Image (tube, rainbow over all chains, first blue to last red; front, side):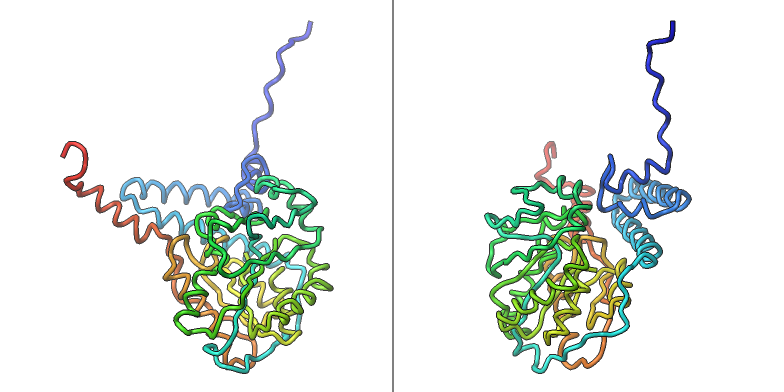
Length: 238
Length: 108
């Protein structure tokens, strides 16, 4: 007779462990860059993390952990994503602002995936999609057409919803202004640094079909902003 | 990349633009031929500042907008101050309180 006990699963490799932070079993969008690091680099990251954490246990200062995460994120994206960038252009479309900032009407457009409660863009035909589902289906988002959500500039923060499968949205849930800076813009209008804020801001999910966006949709959105009679646009990518 | 494409289309349509990009994506405005960009030394998901830090958020938005008037060619500028999580401000106060318990602490 053969032994009926299932053999133990093979131990998880370090490669599989670090890659699991990229939309895997340990998905964490703050640390999805681990998949872009070599095993040696990832080992260096974890060793550094624990070394710094030891210091934090002594003095309670967590800022060194923030610095470590930020620096490694930059290192990973600069080294790996730059090389993979598919879209490179030699020309630089440029329009000068022909008035002072204090006389200009400014609009805000972000790729943060915000919308107003009750105005769900229903991506992929799904109503009330969760953040977890957006992360799980990010590959489908990258092939789909983006929707531009309209956000009246006076929208109370508790009426704002954010959902985006491509970046860590927890900071935006704590304070939408980190990616959708409505309050800073309202303040600058009050301070007369800008002439006025356009009545509507706009947001879309930046994880989207780049070709559709580039070849047709972005020009349509430009017409939308022109209809709002804006003088200039502040854009916030995520 | 999405905002790079939007920014190029808006400029081509006659709308001046400026974007706030994090340092990890600094190559994007360079590679994509974006008109104006302010680069912040921030982690992903917090390009305009840490949650709750309205003063820094306002400073960064203002620095970005001030790239708009007067410029006639591409401008990609780094915001000079490092990322400042709110713990730097409130955490220091919290730690100070924990080292020096006030008379409201139980048992004091």
